[in-house]
Length: 154
Image (cartoon, rainbow, N blue to C red; front, side):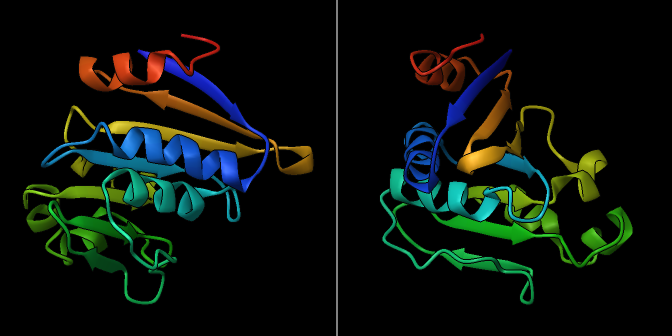
């Protein structure tokens, strides 16, 4: 099911991420797509908050993966500097995707063929005046139902 939501500023983007984060469980994978500066890391900050993590969330572009420990770990992956799935596989990505935590993958299009079938796929498009169009494609009923109240286009 596809749900389209809109945020008007970074606070609303964080709040939407927080709502999603509160719905995620072990081994859930969130694939984030969007141009540079679209709000992927801002959205991830919200996911961390929703998971109960008080972590310093920033783009792991140079480290590629940041691990944030809590009741359930958050694995924040940024594939911006990688070219293809072969490069991604060298990271040992499966250890994160199936490591009992939540994996949030920025630039997920670089590993599309490696993502689990029940991945929460999110595209963030930026518009004028900080407007963000956030399209969420998800087959998991508990997540869809949890986000449905916020939906403008389900």
